[in-house]
Image 1 (cartoon, rainbow, N blue to C red):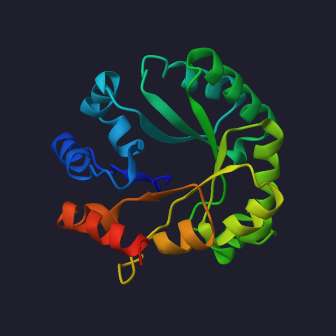
Image 2: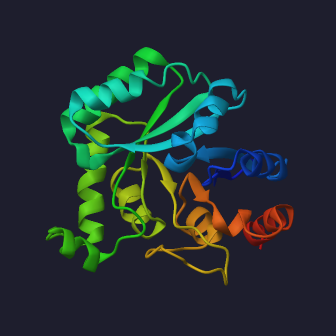
Length: 231
């Protein structure tokens, strides 16, 4: 039976804590891959650690800039041999997305590009404040079309929009952040679902989890997650 894919968010600049998270989230029952974001990547020890990291990992940089700058950013990652996933923001537009995909294939044939849509911290009110006239659902579907057109490997979106995107683009690899175990605080997230609802009900391919797993006793939290998915 295929294991559920979990990207564990190592959102800290504390290298010892990152090593602890990686060590204590090991389990044969789930496919767990560490995800490193801006906080860790920007830290001096973090960038150095990733150069020598010997297991596959997800680098969540949400690249979003003019085409040449985006290309140069991707090219600067060529020493990270074990990087398997990297994020680029759909807001960068068609030409930027195409350029990033092309450069990624040149530096690492195993590198998969995931297009980020509307952040899970935003809602319809937030979009209006920015100046968007579309709803979250409408904008995510529009961005998904762009990601599909470019031929990126997958899409990052809330599980709340995953069903409509899967219906139209069923072969897109879907990754959903904004995941919390039942009863956990939502913190700064606006569109939150449980791991079970994301993976079993909405049929996403992978989920991103951070605070629900790394707060408190990590091993106990992993057991809670496994029990929750097997309910």
